[in-house]
Length: 473
Image 1 (spheres, one colour):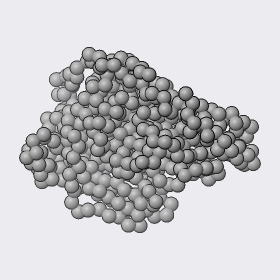
Image 2 (cartoon, helix red, strand yellow):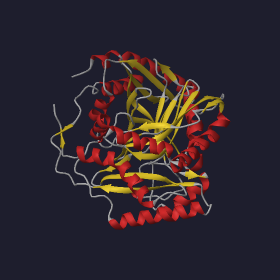
Image 3 (cartoon, one colour):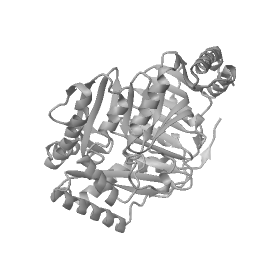
Image 4 (spheres, helix red, strand yellow):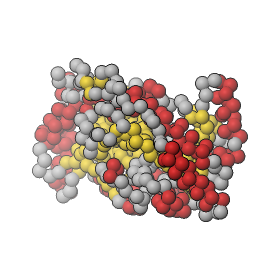
């Protein structure tokens, strides 16, 4: 059934696209058109379940601070970049697009997507569809912020386009928004998780021991080593995994991004940087301990983490690196002297919230470039740690531990660090990722157990949602 909300906005779409086409004809190049308007309450996760067809690019985002969720579907334009200049290239191209944009409604134009952890790192086939930098101008975005729901329609208008044809195309997409999402029957008997083999565990612990020796010899201050783990699965819907993570890990930042037939998703505890109205917020997140269902034991574990010299040293390296990265871009910088606990479902971390009032011209992509990778996911010093990871880690991180998020035409945006994540591909199940920061007194066996703790949330989510596809009316 057609949505009356969609149909009533056809004239607005037509008028805005017509203006953009005329501007494109006058300027001699394509022009960005962005139309936004309010809609009745709608959960972007439901739209995710309705629209995902296993091929069309999309981006899903859901966070608690602030309470923003959106689903961005289809690609009107991709901005990409390669190598070390990928951040600069996208920022320049985005500013050029926004300069002449035709905007109608309360929302600014918006890009969303992600970056490769290290463009100079090793490459593996399962990350092939995920470029060094890939941010999409989505054709349709459904956003919910607090109690307010809106739709953002975006189009690259060119001379000679027919405005009514473009408007009807967008209207036809809007008509689908309230269709039922795909659901599953009972979960199939999935492949139980068996974890890494004894040999794989020994090999990884050996890598950790070697890294610790290098740190003690003064070659590095800290390095983060990660590992991947394959999880065979039956049929699985990406949106259903996010739905499960929302229920079980709602105090994290949920994300999902499709490229081709692969979907990268997760529930990250770590923000890289958020910018709103010229103010930046980020945090240092490093130092990890388990949680306990026993309140007294849980409190003891948290206090031990706060008192741990090893974890406090590891954490302070991250704080110092963020301070050094933000200082040249900031008029003021607020950093508390001591960390607090950030408690998640199965782990807790040392956390230091950081705020900055930005200097004029300091855009969010400049901050992303300055901050990534922090010592929490790379190491310290940065160049030496990256070189060590390339030579010794033995895997392609792809978009794992990399910046993923969004930026709008008014300079606002939000990027997380893509942790607690998995890459889903047809026929291959999930590839899960976890790592830990190593300093001079790190213990290889304890570090391996830490990666197991970090893998647990995604393992649980994938196994709980694996089944054969079922559509319900």
